[in-house]
Image (cartoon, rainbow, N blue to C red):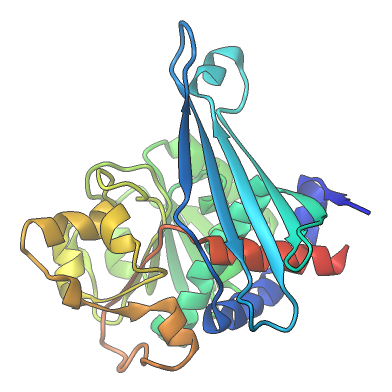
Length: 315
């Protein structure tokens, strides 16, 4: 029987501690992740819409096999109607028979696997004594970052910077209600200089984080820039840091890496490795307490599939 999980149910079964561990195993094990499909839907008298299909499936050698597809609809015209412009559904199938197993809330899958992936990377790349977290952004994904990071590091202080101070204030209130010591950061440079970990989840198209501001030992996590034209950090950040990515596609899809590569400032060899290589111990993460590390993610169908299986096993 097809199992259906709404947003609340999907969220309830994606506890960050369990999700981080599942992602660690998932990136080490691997799966098949084809290129995502983009389809344009022409609309009259409003912006065209987009349908995204993001499939992934277990390797044939896996003991238990699954197939999953995330379907994402982007309808920009919905903004004028007071409706969400982006919706997402995840469908999980039996990998041997193709029979449907579950339909899950794709927005929750995406948001929670995104911050859990960053937390997993931070477990390999940030200092173990990291206590001060700076979050750039106050949207849905940004608001989840502190909870995910608290599962891997002893986060004692969270500062929030956002281009919209009211959004930052709302997020800080929510964090304080959840037991964090949180405050609004109005001086971005000072916040960057003071942080042990900086995590950005914005829609910035020009750099926010300046490499000259980074203190020794800082870990930088860039979540938001998912197109070649988006930037959250300047090229000095990339030059100063030991850089890791979630998948090799980050070099082509993320402006934070693609732009300095295109300009010749760095080569692809500047990237030290992927999260899968960290998870399998093929490469090492942080090597000393003064090292500046950077993790750039653009999202992976593997992480979606891992999260979906975790929910399904709990239903």
